[in-house]
Every structure is written in C-alpha cells, then in structure tokens.
Amino acid sequence: MAEATTAAPLRIAMLSYYLPSGSKIGVGFQAHELATELARRGHHVDMFSDCPPVPGAAYGHRHVAMSGSLRTFRFATDLRKQDFTGYDVLHAHGDDYWLWRRRAPLHVRTVHGSCFEEARHIRGAKEKLRMLLLGFTEVLASVVADRVVVVSPQTRRWVPRSHDVIPNGVDTARFTPGDAEGRADRPVVLFVGTWHGRKRGKDLAAAFARDVLPRVPEAELWMVTRDAPADPGPGVKVLGRLSDEDLADAYRRAWVFCLPSSYEGFGIPYAEAMASGLPVVATPNVGARYVSDEGRAAVLAELDDLGTALADVLLDAPRRAALSAAGLERSRAFSLTAVADAYERLYTTPQQHGDQS
Image 1 (spheres, one colour):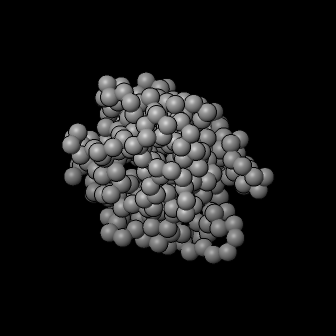
Image 2: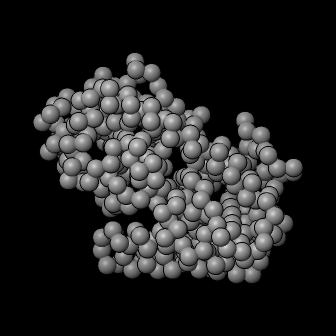
C-alpha cells in the first residue's frame, strides 16, 4: 500500500460524470483509479457522479442523478447545487465550467483530451456539434479552475490556460508482464475499444482479414468490445467486456496490442499494454505519439499500412522482444503511483490563485 506524502490526510471532492460502474468511457476509469489510490493513501475522497457506485470502491460516492436528454450538460448545472464546503480540494475530471464561485480552497481541473481535436475526426454533423460545444466548456473550465492539468503536452494546443502536465496512470501492480509460457499458443492481436466510432475496431478487423491472415493464417484478433456485430470477420474472437483481472490476463497472453484510434487524448490501453510487456502497434494519433514517445516505444502506422505492420511484428520475434522492453521502460512514466504522487504535490503546494504558466 502506498504511503501518503502529505502531512495530514486531505478531504477531496472528485467530479466525474462517468465511472466504470455505468460507462466504458476512459475518463471514468481514470477518475476511479486515481480516487482509489488517493483513498488508499489515507485521504478522504468522495466521488460526485451520475453513475452508480463502483462495487467495493475505497472512496465515498455522492450520486448526482440525471435523466432525459443532454445529461452531461445538465450534470454541470446540478453540480452548482452540491455542497463542497469542508473539502480541501475540488478535483474535476469534467463538467465544472459553471463552478465560478470558490467552493474549496483549491479547484483542480484535469483535461483528458480536447473535444475540439476530437471534433476534427468524429463522424456525423450532430456529434461534431456536440464535441464543439464540449470543447467550449473545456475552455470555460480552464478559466474557472485554480490549476489546470493536461494529460499530454499536445493537449495544450487547445487549452488556453494550463499549468501542469500529469499523464493518466496505470496500476502497475495489476498490469505486469507475464512469462513466455503464459503467451497464447498462436499469434494473437489484442484490441480494447469499440467497433464503431473513433476507436475504429471495424477498420482493424478489415485490415486483419486483408493483410494479416494471408501472411499469418493461424493468427487471431481478440476484441475486448461490446458493440461488434454477430459476424465480425475471419479469425476474430469477441471477448465482450472483461473484468479487471481478465483484462490484465488478456494483455499477458496476447502477442501484440493494436488500437487504431483516429484520436486519443492519452490512450490508457497503450500504457496498460506496455506495462504488461506487450508490443504496441497503433495509428499516429496524439495520445499514441505521446505514450509511445513518438514511436520509440511502439510501431506507429497509418491506417492503410496497419495490417502490414501487424503482420511484420507478429512474424519477427526479436522485434517483438525489443518493443516489449522499450514499452515496459516507457510505461514507468505512467505508473499510478507516480501520477498520484504528482497530484499530491499539486494539492499541497501553495498556489497563487489565477496564475498562469
């Protein structure tokens, strides 16, 4: 168990519309992981969320119930009605853009990516408009908060007022390398994401059938996803949603990890795969470039070349070993322990409210 670095436990109000109990959105998983680590260190953490409590969570839960349409926008309005007095820190992972009046000694906002950037890649006029509106709320939030954190340096392009870069964190006690005997007995590509949308699982399955299977006929594509069709294509095995333990085991058993997103603000699955000693092949989105250290710890390939890159790695054992070592070394920068340390320092360092850097 990690030890707190602060002189006394803090009372922390954490805000996240999403949690793993009700959503597959990555922000919710990260908020849950950080709250859990901080609670383990002795801090009192309460999570304000529309999602139900996560079973067995180490932190408290305050349900801000929503229904009907435009729930994410109305959630931000309802947060104005919550009582945050008595907390030392208000740490928002979204939806704090109406909290202008000071409600805690320190107001921190973590921006997990840019909705403006995502709007450039998302399909559909309605979804583009929604992303643009959310992008403006991120700008508002960066003005409201005392301290604005971005999860990758590239995100600063869209956040006019940001102070710190603190990456998302991976529990390196859970995501650990396995041994050679634990790998699957056939070449396996692992995908974690959605079939539709910016994760582009559908495109990966097509590239796998077109470019991988002709060269590696015994290969399989394991897809941790819940929206795949009944017939996802040859060689594809749909795993659905996995428990934390089963997901960690899937990383250890696979030969290569691939997530060909059009956009990731960070990309937690990349870091999870690297911490598990799993070579990574990805498209060169913002998150993949940052997590892979501009391709030094992974293979970055455009979507049209993705299948060829995957087959090359599957057929080259020395290259897989080199990628595994480079990814494991890079993943140390994203350990949950290091991330929680950084937030503790941020919470306890005297701040000049309204400063910029």
